[in-house]
Image 1 (cartoon, one colour):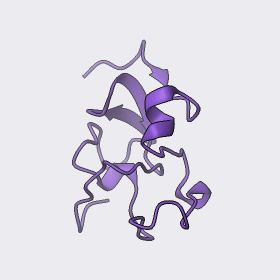
Image 2: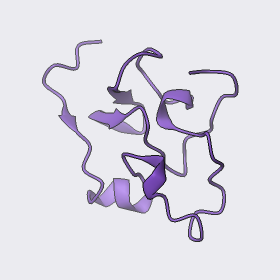
Image 3: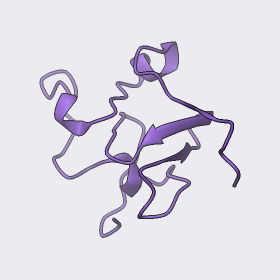
Length: 83
């Protein structure tokens, strides 16, 4: 997948904000997002379109946008044992 012309997802974007997306899991409001479990992040999600070593990659939830491997949102069902 060629992502050279893709922009990084802005946390303040409408869809990103609704889904609670943050570039770093350390920024997650755990009182607001109680479903967050430490150790979950984008690179472990089923929507991650990169490899285990990519710092930024595509996500099926945010077409033509790059998300941080260390990020998180509420719709990322997380696979165990990946990353």
